[in-house]
Image 1 (spheres, helix red, strand yellow):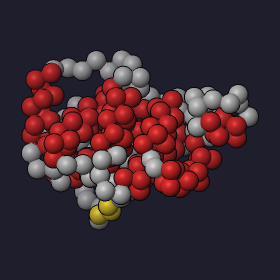
Image 2 (tube, rainbow, N blue to C red):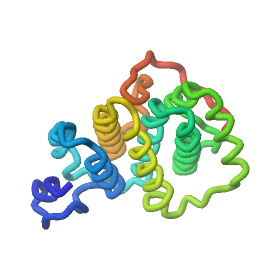
Image 3 (cartoon, rainbow, N blue to C red):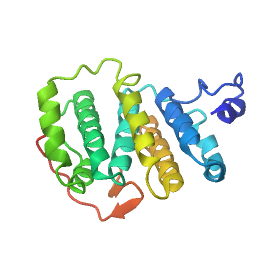
Image 4 (tube, rainbow, N blue to C red):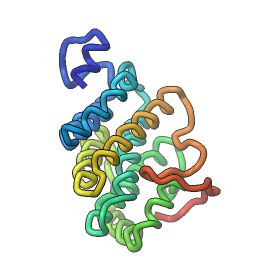
Length: 206
């Protein structure tokens, strides 16, 4: 992020104004949790974050959601529950922003949750027990917490460097779609680094 500030012509800082704050937080976390060898592979991603700061509140939601789903795809069962709760929380926030029913669940999230047996049921019960969520300050609180937890969780898995780089690259793409006014979810279903054939979206009660 310091190099991004340099490319943008800003004062040298790891909190550049040219990048969405939550995306920058993700980049810093990934950088900190990547090995020295893997860190060099992050360099080609730097230009992509320069000037990427959409004002649409959905940007924070899609960044956090992408991170939660990426982690959910690779972490062990004991960490899956936390990520499953984060997926549901992000989906509900997006539903509020888009004027959709709060039980709306995208095809990508459904697939990610179904790959972790029991995680969806546990997450539903947890979210229902907690009750309505106050989404004010999502970017700095729930969103930031989701990003941190996802990075720390993925750090523990095999091929962590590759998974973390894929997480950051995917979050950049997700943020770019929002900045360009495109759909929050692209065609097809991709969870983590694993691609599957497109599935027809359906609504699942959460």
